[in-house]
Image (cartoon, rainbow, N blue to C red; front, side, top):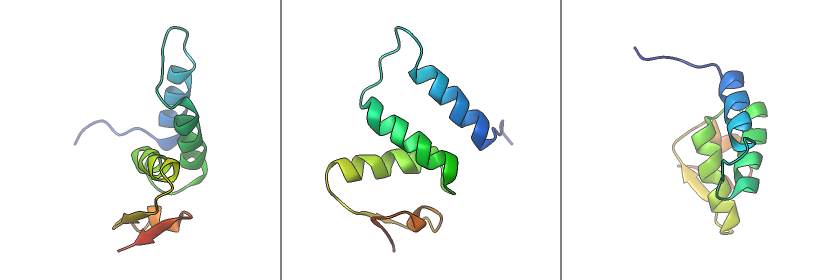
Length: 77
């Protein structure tokens, strides 16, 4: 089994990374919103990033992920 990180560690490290001088992040607001949802949600950070992209394009998201399906504008298949 690989290395397992706790959600709060992932959150704090990614948040620190995107705020680092000379690091440029495309769609920073989307990433920050995904981090906020990740902090309080049940799904993975990548899921909230995908959801943010869908929302930015005014699309709903279809998923098999029961945890992510608890979010607004997400439909469980």
